[in-house]
Length: 333
Ligand SMILES: [Zn+2]
Figure (cartoon, rainbow, N blue to C red):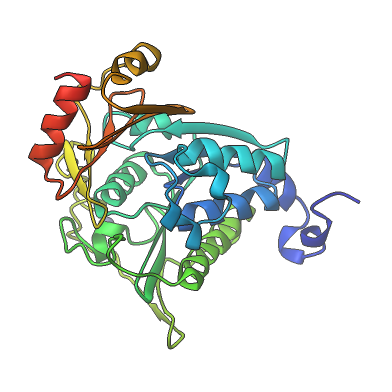
């Protein structure tokens, strides 16, 4: 009896569903509460080829709801550690790991050859980027968001269903952007991620997938389902104006809400030699290397540095200007 026996008993998986899952190439963008759950369920179901993209490191407040991670992962890049845990769940899984921010400059390279994209992100800028890419390349994706007590899920099949821009045209409000100042039930993120994976599996198995918008609330628990019509004037899927792919919504500096942290991304990206930089930074404070990231802790603030020059700067009352000046002083201009 093989490891997928219990789902192969289901009619939905016969006759060749398991082979379909083994052949599929799925990208999970963002490995927080939604993405780690999606990746785990997909790997356990037998989706062998996964592309994992995440720009962040594991923080203690993540452990309340993010699957896969343990206390031993604190400070490590999420994509690296998620992959390590997934590999122990299924040693035959083929994982492509990208410790990176998904941006217009790299999306075609990182998501090349995938059949489906799952949204595990926490922000609209990345979602609009995925939506543009999805419509341009005709690759389906499944939007998911959760914050406070409300979550949303919508499967987008370019050319067939409405796209994200039909319902939430950019740059509409930032509602449901996750934020460390906003609470969230761990049951809500699990419900949202689970529904995304259900729709993903249906799609990969070749069954029809509704293009409806699902709205889930907890406390009290309710599920609403709304039909979403294609907008004949949608900037993205009707007029093929891909402003997100052109970089319109991508910020060079980004204040991470509620974390006293600013992300700085040098343009163009630069390749840093973290080993020699670590020696320099030791003169300034405590330096730790965790996988692909370098961490500097000084009385003035903390720096988490990625190999492409991107950095998270944490400082008291951290403004983009303050963070940029610390970055320039520590890493160079
Ligand atoms: Zn549209």
